[in-house]
Image (cartoon, rainbow, N blue to C red; front, side):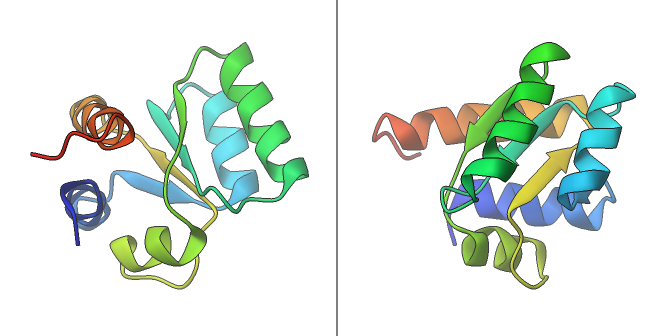
Length: 106
């Protein structure tokens, strides 16, 4: 388990994570979400819906892992979309995902 998944697990235990497509779309609209993480294997329709909503409401949205990876990081079943509600967790997870995408791992 890498640092991104560890931070997601920590955020989940702190109750600063939302899951589920409709829940996340609603929370983005209400300004409750600071970062949205989509699995790379999300369907085209789900990806477009969530990314469009994030773009409109200026919420960062990143692609990471697959649905099994996201689910296991949260201690749940498979998850396609994860919303982080805490600004601190969102910032740190965003930084870690950015580092992982450029090939740098702490």
